[in-house]
Image (tube, rainbow, N blue to C red):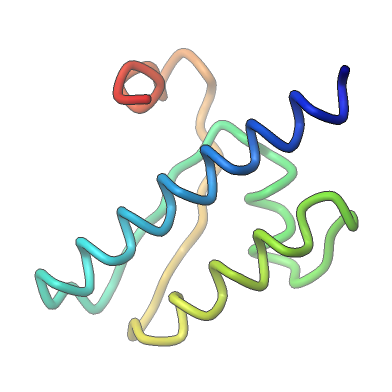
Length: 88
């Protein structure tokens, strides 16, 4: 059960990140700050390593990130990210 919930969560996260990055690229934004309440993702994106469960997501996102001048990944509390959760 946990495995399927994790896959579902990562799929939603992957989709949301890609949509945001595609939108930012279309708006010709070169410097971007990505906020997430998923601490493990933020740490992996900033440190360049992570668990196998999110490796595919990281590789996928890094392909998009390369087209920006600078992208920062910042952790925020779940409560502070309420709007993003309401969009899903």
